[in-house]
Image 1 (cartoon, one colour):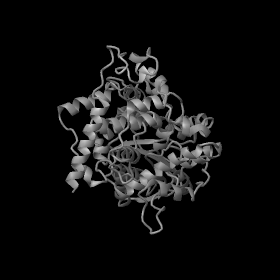
Image 2 (cartoon, one colour; image 1 turned 180 degrees about the vertical axis):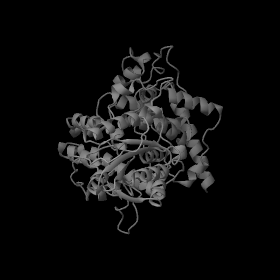
Image 3 (spheres, helix red, strand yellow; image 1 turned 135 degrees about the vertical axis):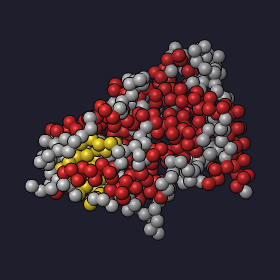
Image 4 (cartoon, helix red, strand yellow; image 1 turned 90 degrees about the horizontal axis):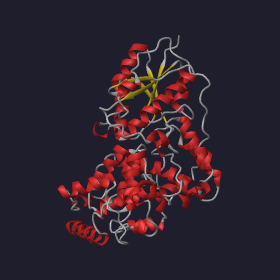
Length: 461
């Protein structure tokens, strides 16, 4: 019998439009493998919310594979070691996978390639990363020209279908039991609200796309309104590769209206990966060196303020609503993400990296590239970013984007307040005793942030 080949899954947990699966199925019997490798990423091991998603996504993937006469083999340890062990056990010599670009995955691919024949395929992004360059042949650093050039190469190829059958090996290697990995939190189970919000897996991804198509034409307006269901909520499905960006593009591109704004968000994923290809340490190092001299608060007071921000107890309703939504569902509305991030960085003067780490642990869509690029954009420290002195006014943002319904949902202490008091109950003299006062005044916070910025600039001269 033809020797089996290994199909190595990572953040590409789907069977449709899966180039590595198609290639593996053409080579011989397929051994689908997922390895929980917490050693290679080191401090970038998957966060708690992402691990919840992973558990359910792997269960869904295994179910789909069994429908095709196959199954998912689970192993834990360093990827190169476990793949080599499986190869020795089964006689496999070739590993197929989709290419990944996070620095630890690139290191893992190099390590695997030293021990087995590794064939990497593209498919997690609209274009193969690194192929889109400026006229001078250098990678783009600024999003707008990157997106302009990417659009010229669109649409992406039509998505490929899942193979009708996946040939099984004569003998299956041993597999861990998914439940033994402890991916689900039980003591306490803080993810009780996740199941009501999400359906991890390919079926859930397809359902999200189908639901979004009806409103995609009005995306540019609705995405900014926290009280409306204007976001696609596809980010965790795209992060875990349960649907390809090409499939999302072809499903939504003809929706009309402002769907191009949504397609630009899909392009932003490519842009963020393009950035970490150039700057692998982007998640922990400011791209603008001057920010190493910004006097971030780093004392007991800052720690207390960070905890208040994390718990949604800042006294700013729009910020608190977002942080509570994050804790309850593993996700936060995109406009509120910017407001909450700006508040931490500029109102509380806390290093953006501390916020990035909190999002890494609590977001079900925690993506190294997107998370880092977004935080550095808000901080002003990125290669393409907002200017630090542009300080969001959360109370104004809340009223401007009609967040009253959103606040009532996530900050029940304020549910009985009417507008405009619900956006700023303290100023209107309607703050309930159960709701905290403002952790700092907006004007005071702005002046402190601008003073810190002046210190940074003075140090640079």
